[in-house]
Every structure is written in C-alpha cells, then in structure tokens.
Image (cartoon, rainbow, N blue to C red):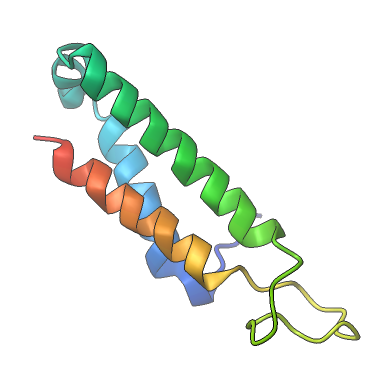
Length: 99
C-alpha cells in the first residue's frame, strides 16, 4: 500500500492535482494547440517538478541549520522543505496556465 507523506500532503497534493488536470481529456485540445515556446516551457516545468521532488526526498547533505535529523537518527529522512515547496509552486504555475 502506498502512503502519502502526511506532513507534506499539501505540497504533494498540489503536484498531484496539476498532473490530474494535465491528464484530463478536456485539456487535450489546449495542450495540442500550444505553440513551440509554450510546449517547451511546459516540458521544462514538468521536468523541474519531477527532479525537485526527487531531490527533496534524496537530498542527504544540507548545510548547517538544516531540518535534517542528526547522523545517528535511523528513521525515515524528511524531505528538503525548500526544494519540495519549489516543486509545489511550479505545479501551481503550470495549473494556472491551463484553461
């Protein structure tokens, strides 16, 4: 069973809603009608969102003052808050472009 990171469900939920909007068949004509510049911008935004989510959950090295647990902690690693928030904000920007 897949469990959502409850502490970050708002950010991950925004990304999920954006992806669901893009998969909506009513958006197909809009997406097909995008010009080359807009398609490139959309592709770059989706790429950045994906990499930011991966980076947020695999960024094991952060400078001093980070929210990561001490080295002796053996539980699950929390995501990098800043990177995850950037991904959520990019998802909102993409969603705002859709009709």
